[in-house]
Length: 174
Image 1 (tube, rainbow, N blue to C red):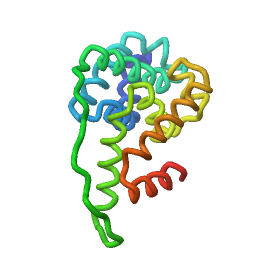
Image 2 (cartoon, one colour):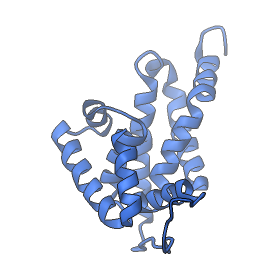
Image 3 (tube, rainbow, N blue to C red):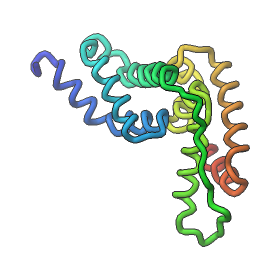
Image 4 (tube, rainbow, N blue to C red):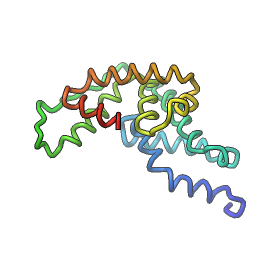
């Protein structure tokens, strides 16, 4: 294609926004390979509709498709497993790996959230969407986004060790 704007525009969009969309997919799935599969599946679904959605916020459309597709995968694949892992015993001021530990602990804690809460946290705090944009993406009321955010943040504060919870609150507030 090309001259009519179809294939080239899609390829340009994926080249420009792909890394951010892949990060979102990773935050939703918690697994690099599943994230790649999720993004690839969504892009394959979007490609035939590209001309229709290209002029009307395609990134928002794809974010919503990522959330919905992940939710349908989660419903099918859930086997009652609960992720867990060992957290560092202590953190000192001179810990050169503190940021990595925080990121890892936060990612583990996010994966324990129910899918709806996880989607809200990813969209609000990692994708930096407003309450209204998040509600539109998830197809729910802004009040639902606020209540799901509050529940998710309460859970994350309980799951993260005190030094990490304090740093995570500062990072989320920033």
